Length: 122
Image 1 (cartoon, rainbow, N blue to C red):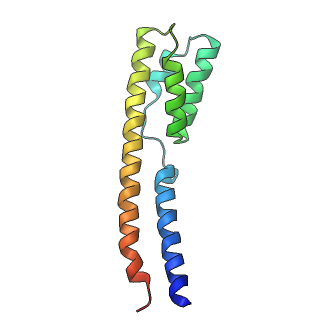
Image 2 (cartoon, helix red, strand yellow):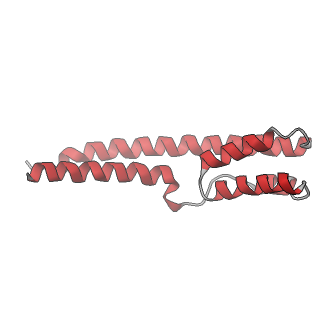
Image 3 (cartoon, rainbow, N blue to C red):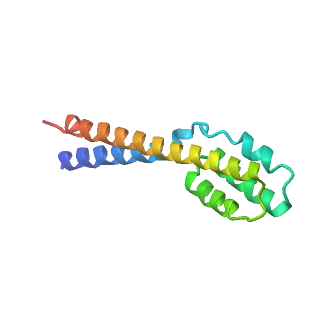
């Protein structure tokens, strides 16, 4: 009975580690949104709202939501070259942030899984 409780606790710890890593652990976003915000400052209201949603998602580390909003924004035919470039730049940074978070989560999960046998009673 004690062994199953230890296993449950160890698995729960591994899952929490992965979840926290994917959520960004409350860290500030590593994505610089200044160029995006600047290039959409004088855009039409609907376009500016979309850019603001993307920035808010990035700042809260909601990278999947940010990518969806950036793709929606990029599909607008009335964008200036500066706006198009700022979207591309920010999308690239978001993709890197997603990749970094996934790599960290994988590393943390691997570490947690190697700790499980140590937590089990002998």
